[in-house]
Each structure stands twice: as C-alpha cells, then as structure tokens.
Image (cartoon, rainbow, N blue to C red):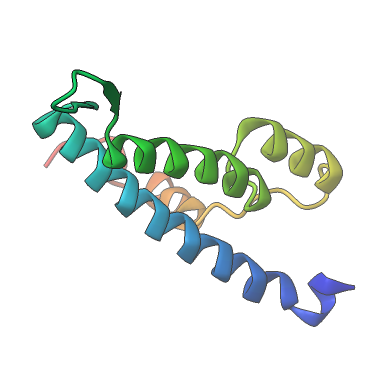
Length: 111
C-alpha cells in the first residue's frame, strides 16, 4: 500500500538525510579524536572520555540504528531481495548500452 502511494520514497529520503548528517558528524568527531585524543585528564588526575569521543560513539550507535531502516545493511538487503523474488530484479542502468556495444561490428577491435 505504501509503495503504491509512493510514500516509501518520502520516508526513505528523511532517513537518508539523517544518515548523511550523522555520517558527517561522525567524521568530525573522529578527526577531533585523532587530533586531540579520546580521553581528557583533569587537574586532579581523573581521566574521562572526551566529549567528542562520546559524540563519536553516539554517531556510531545512531548509524547502526538508522542504516537497517533504510535497507543499508546486509541482513535487510538479503530480506528485501528474498521478498522481491525473481520477478522484480534490480534494474541494470547500463544493460542496454553494453548490449548495444557488444552487437557493434567493431566490438572486438581496439581503437
């Protein structure tokens, strides 16, 4: 029903934007971890996880939650392919172009 109403595209778009934003935040947090380290030491000697390292972990957990919702993990992709069956294979964008080139009289010649 959602597919017929084309609503899955709208909801998937929202999740993809969230994944992209989270990925950008993860890259920034990882860079800061590489430059400044993952831990901070207080004057008292107490060591704790730096806020940007906590951000990194939060981003990873968020991506692990969002990616299956968008069909971007192997388990979900396998389930989708199984549910679609053989009658709805993925489109091959270059299939016509490749077949046309193979049928050309000059197909085996090098330029």
